[in-house]
Length: 313
Image (cartoon, rainbow, N blue to C red; front, side):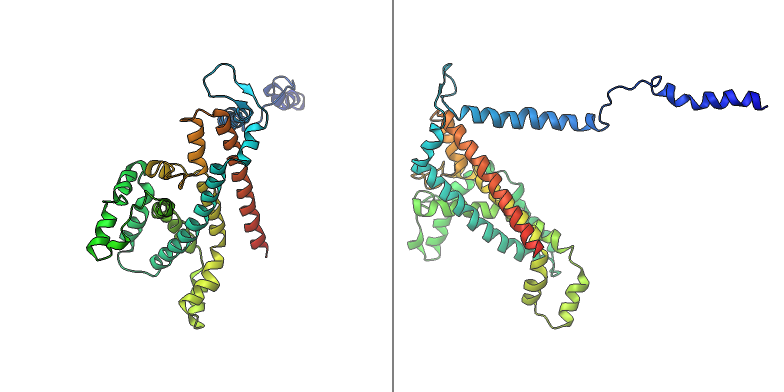
């Protein structure tokens, strides 16, 4: 019995060796490579290649069509330093981000607090607040162009209520065109701010709020001392999204005012398009795109670092 069982055990012990290909050792693929390969090809093959190719084009004086582009080095970047329209677009982008972010934060937080106060028909109000987010700017742009026209609905309402002196060409003059673009953007994206704040408020422990009420804290005191500190991470995330969105702003100003009048609503996105497509300054437009990318990365890193520093404190 002992002599017959030993070979059986020996054969059983040798099975793993045969399963590994006879004990041969060769290169092994990472087990997760097939799953990440599509994303890797997409990011490296399209995104990073596109960034590198755009950086190369930014060193050329090229219209995008002619076969012999001229290599000009850093001339396109030094040209920005003396371009008044570029600096005007930077000012408009910065002002646009600050004002829209502040107003959207205040309005979105107010809506979120009201919806958490158990008001009647809250579900309908949520839908009303979020509807502008799902409407395409291309659909709403003609509506706003007509609304803010000299003979549009806004001026008609002002004249009807006896405020005809305030009627003016809202998108036809430099003093009011940019505020109109800000108003449209706030109307469109406040729903996102509301949803994120509302979701973050649902994560606050109700017992903490109940303890504050038992201690006699007013609603404003509870909002300032308990709710707002708990929403700090959401606020930082919204600031990052708002900053990157301001740098990428294109659709609303282009569809409503085409960057005018007199470059009053020119943003970095619209200026890149203007230089690249209508004016055929592809090299300069590529340089503007690289600067836009660098500024977006720096702003995202700065906001993220500020958020972590506040959390550490």
